Each structure stands twice: as C-alpha cells, then as structure tokens.
Length: 393
Image 1 (cartoon, rainbow, N blue to C red):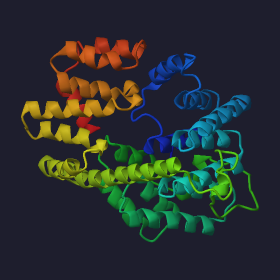
Image 2 (cartoon, one colour):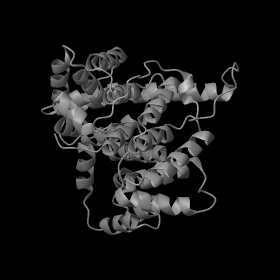
Image 3 (tube, rainbow, N blue to C red):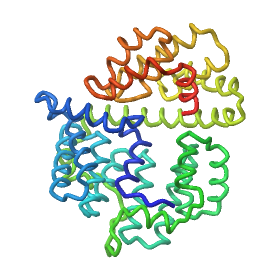
C-alpha cells in the first residue's frame, strides 16, 4: 500500500463527508478563496475563518506556530457556528499535526455527541483510539460496533468495508468481495478499491495512516462520549438549561440532511449495479422513482440528467434537467470552485458558447487563471468528450 500522510487520509475522509468542495479545484480553489477572504468584510466570516485555517493546515503542517494559529481560527469559527462540521473536522487535523492526540480525540467525541448519526466520525474515533494505545482486541470490538451500525443502516460504501476489515469480522471478506463487484473503474468506489482495499493488510493500513506518532501510548483512555467533551471547543450551554429552539432546529435539520444523503447513497448503489451491466434504462428507472418523490437529493439529479441523455430522451428534456441541476448547484457558494459546474453548463447550453461563457464560466473562480483556462478550452473541446467524462465520473 502506498504511504499516505495523516493529513491526506483525513482530508480524504472530509471529502467523503462533504466538508470540502465536491471536486478538488487544485490551486485555483485556494487562489479564489484567498482573494475573497482577503477582503475586510469577509475575513472574519465562518467560511473564511475555516478557509484560512485549512490553508495553514495544508501549507504549513510542519510549522507548530502556524498550526496553533489554525487551531485558533477553527475555534473562532466554531464559536460563531457550533454546528460547522468543516471547522470541527479541520480542528481534528490540526490537533493531529501538533501531536495533541487527546485534543483530537476530544474533538471527535464532541462531534459524535452532537451528530450521533455520523458513522464516519465513529469509524475515525476507533482508528484514533487504537493509535493512542487501545488494546487491539478492544479496538476490533470498536470497529465491529461501527460495522454493525453501518449494516443496520443499510449503507454499503467504502466506510462500511473499512470498518469490517479493521474489525476482522467473519463476514469482512464477503463484504470486500461484494464491494469489488460494485466498484466501477473511474468512480470514487473504484478509486477506493485500487488505492485502499486491493491487497488490504490491517497492520499496514494502520501503520501507514500515521494518525499517532510511533511510540506514543496513553495509559488511560476515555471510553465514553458525552456533551462535556465539547468544553473548550464550542460555547457550552448554561448548566441545566435545555437546548435552545434554534440549536434544536439546527440539529434536526442536520440529521434530516444526513439521512437524506445516506438514502441517496443507497439508491446510487442500486443504480450502479445496473450501470456495471450497462442497463442504463433500469438505472434511470430507479433514480427517477426517488428523485420524483424527493427532488432535494441533489447527488442523484446529475446522474438522472446524464442517463436521460444516454437513453435517448428528447434533447429539450435532458437540457432542462441539466439547467435545473445548475440552479441547484448555485444555491451553494462552492459551485464557483467546482469544475463540474462548468462541465454541466457545457452540457446544458451547447452549442451556444456565448451562453456558456456569460451564464456559467463567468461565475467560475472569477479573476483566476482557472477561469481563463476554461474560457480558452471552450473553443477546442467536444461536447461528447465532456458527456462521457461526466458519465464515467
């Protein structure tokens, strides 16, 4: 297995949890947000506090003073928005870089206490505990409990496979084989198979993850999770006071959005089984059934548009679908740094390059080289290449 740093592994986890943009925009992403967050009116906003901290974590991970600055910025963001998962996740990474493993564990525990439905955080907690000295037998039980929760939730994704393999459960090999069957090359699952699960070795994985410095061992590890783990990380409610109505509403909304995301992943897994067989009509039928009743599951809407075109639906139908998806992306500021935003715009407005430039490219990382590259690339690309690239993705 290729060696990966703890920052790389944890940021990969953040991508899976939607804490970072859907598609990496490379240097252009940071260039755009650097410019935006340099403006006085934006500098202290939650998004810019998190961006500034992320920049320090990615660019100066070996500089302890910079990492302490990042920790301060993440905490400032959490003081404004205690439910901000990006800030909490980044804080864990910064603590790992400063070798403050108890601080990292406390932050993970805090995240779980506020988002008990988040199984990814529970999986990461087991890895961190084992690295800090939890006996292997207890760690395997921890992973086994997480795998059980994944199984009961009906989810079948890379995190479930990893939990089962780290638990070394009796059904782990069968779960891994089933995942391999579903993991289509060129997809996120295909990438996970090639880089993580192919020739998987538990000891090698944990050694290469390097979450905790070799030789570190904490003799007394907290086994329980409680709201008190959030002390010093987010503003704590007054003792004895019930959760505020706004906090309760936020918690309920986040839980609903999380379960909606998981529901979409389940439907996507079913559709992928048909895509592997090139039965595009059957895959489209499954996706249309769920998106017609629950149009908010945006992650399936793009595949629905692509499959409508692939199965020969009228042009006006799939173009309207692409434009509707563009509008959905534009509800979130991250569309300005998502290369798929431009690709979908090309599919939606082709061959009207004037509209593509004035309605789409103009919004993509304004003033950056990345925007100029797309503007130039538009004159030489072919729509069919963009379509096949998106369908493969």
